[in-house]
Amino acid sequence: MLELIIGAKGNGKTRKMVERANNESKRTSGSIIYIDKSNKHMYELSNVIRLVNLHEYDIQSPDAFMGFIQGLISSNHNVTHIFLDNFMMMCNIEADALGAALKEIDKISEKYNVTFVISTAVEESMLPAEYAANVVCKL
Image (cartoon, rainbow, N blue to C red):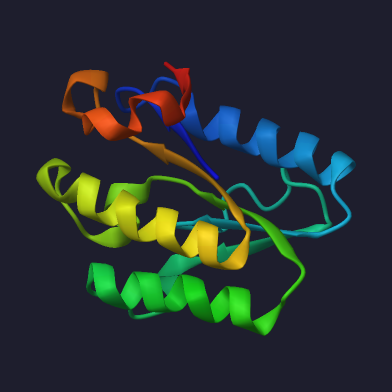
């Protein structure tokens, strides 16, 4: 499953992501991974959520990022949720490549039965039409 939180930069997407991750940690018996660009939100997240600081890894392309995600899943087969904050920055892509990246994440989600919750600074009009139904929050 793929869930999207979209909106302009500075509208509270990260706050919503942290809130969703913490709420999910109370409901699931599986593992939750929260991938961010820093450790800034370490103390806001529940201690049962694994925070991964992406800047500790040398990821330069969308393919490298997708491989990284699959590596995280393969290291723990109990992963039920992965939260990706600021998705386009993490993947190192522009809005025109968003559809292809989301398609790849969707494939990974289906293959490993992992729910991805993704925030990205994109307006709804820039979102590929096939992913409009995946938007759970517009800010």
